[in-house]
Every structure is written in C-alpha cells, then in structure tokens.
Amino acid sequence: MDGELAQLRAEFDRLHKRECELQQELLNVHTAEEAKRKLIDDTAKLQPVVVIDHLPVGVLVRILDFALYITCYSQWHKHCIQKHLFAAVSRCWRDIIMTTPSLWTTICVCPTWPSSLVEMHIERSREYPLAIAVLEWRSVANDNTFPGPVLSCTRRWRSLTIRASVVPTQSLLRNLSSVSLPCLKRIQIESYQDVSVEFPATDNTPVLEQLVLKNCRPAVALVPSLEKLTTLVLHGQIGHWQLGPQSIHMPLLRSLTIHVDCSSMLLQAIVVPGLSHFEASLFDVASLFGEIPLVFNEVHHLCLRASIIRSVAQVCQAFPNVRHFEVGTIYI
Image (cartoon, rainbow, N blue to C red; front, side, top):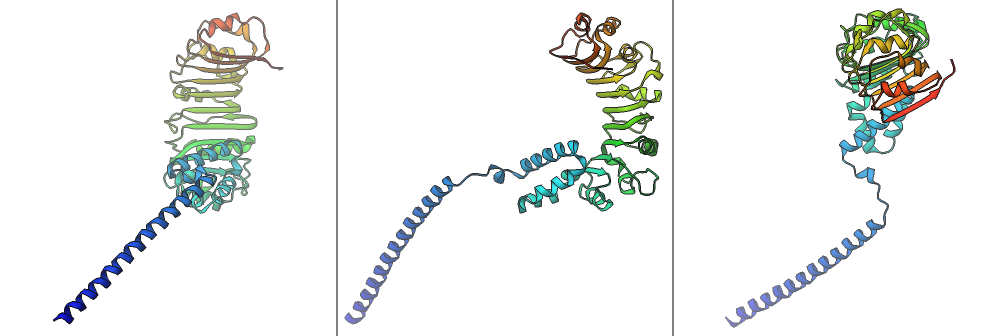
C-alpha cells in the first residue's frame, strides 16, 4: 500500500514539473511573439507607403476610368495602349481592368484599331453605354459605312465623335439618318473641310444634350433638334437658315460657342434664358451687341474674339452679370 502511494506521488510530481515547464515555455513564446510584432511594426514604419496599393477597388476603378477618359479625348487611337500599360502595373490592376465593363466603353473606329479589338471592347463592356469615335476613316471596301459590330450596338451609344474628310463624314452620317440612337447624349462632328450636315434629327436622338459641329454647314432641318440641347458649338455656315427674331427657343441651353458667318442673325433668333457660358468669334463686338435688344442676364462666363474691338459698353449692357470676361483680337 505504501509503495503504491509513493508511486502516485512521484507521478504527480512529474506532471507538476512538466506543467511548470510548459507554462514557462508558453511565457517565452508570448515574449518572443511580442518582440517580433514590435520589430515588424517598427520595420513597416520605415518602409515607403504606396497609397494606391491600399485603395478600395471602387476608388481605384474611378481613378483608372478618369485617366482613360482624359486619354481618350486627347489621343483616341492610343486609348487601348494606355489601358494595357495600366494593366501591366500589377496583377491586381490587371484583374480589375479585365473585369470592369466601364473601362471598355471607349471604342475607336480608325486604321490602328482592328475589328477584333473593336469586338473585344463591345463584348467586355457588356451592356454599358459606349463612346464611339471615328477618326481618319478609310474603308477598305470604299463604301464608307460603319463596321457591323459597331452598328449592332447603336442602342448603347452614349457619344459619337467623327473626325474625317468630307466624303466619309457625309456617308457615315447618311448611314445614321434612319438609325435609332436612344442613349446618344453627345455628338461631335469635325470635318477637314466644309461639309453639309443633316444629322442629327429629333426622332432618332431623343436624349441628345450636346452638339458640336466644326467646319459644318448644318441643314435648316436641324433647327428643331437644337431646342433640347444643353451645350451647342457651331463653327461653319448658317446663312442659309434665314431665321427670324426669337424663333429658336432653347430653354435648357447652358453653354453656347459660335464661329459662324451670320452671328448677328443667330443671336437675335435664339431665346436662351438659362445660358451661363458664351463664347463667340465676331466681326465687330460693339456694333453687333448694340443691335440686339435682348439681355443675357444669366451669362457668367463670356469669351469674345473680334476683328474690330471698340467700346464694349454695349457688351456690358447685354451681359450685365458676367463674372469672367475674356476679349481678344482675331484676324479675318
């Protein structure tokens, strides 16, 4: 009996000793862990912080979208190249670019974009609205028509930019005359020479807000489509319009830029109660606005270029609430 009790006490002492050893070992591990954590924190503080690597995905997408937006309006044909450069930054950036439809909505129809690249953008953009640009258009078949993949998604066009010579521009616009463009909000047409334009029409562009025509001779039939615009830029000939005073009502127009042959007729014809931004190239600033009885009360930003600059008193009367005023000389 005494031998069995002694054996139990010996086993208990061994277990107690082992418990103390394990507790000491655990304490040592905790101490080492705290030391390593402090060393990591101190080392991390000495490392340069790359903020963009820690941005939420949504914020990074907006940054990339903005960078590509700037690129696509300054150099459309290099838009896809810029996108590939961004994708090469890191695997994270590549995954975001490849899986974000909004980064694939800019499509350029030009010699440097093969049809496969256009189709890839249409597919990866899914159902997002598209920005279409036609630059230096040269049709291989010499038929001057939009490529099939681009025409197949006209319901998604958000903006259309055409910069080409006269014949391609007229042919491309003729192809769109009967096409429905329910989402198109901006049209910009820039011809290398004066070109007659009969597009857009009110029926096929119901939500059009911005119209930019440069080196264009817009048809009289376009006048009704101007009434719903918020931005209008006219560079070209409009003398054939023969407008009467206060015959064009544009209640939504906020920005107007004109460089036309009959600016006096146009300014007397328009009714623009909400206009806040006005730019114009004129012959004689003072005499022109002296003939116009209307007052542009809401215009805050005014930029005038004229070949003859005399007293601007009439201008001040026509634009009494201007906050930013630029005036310069042009040579006609």
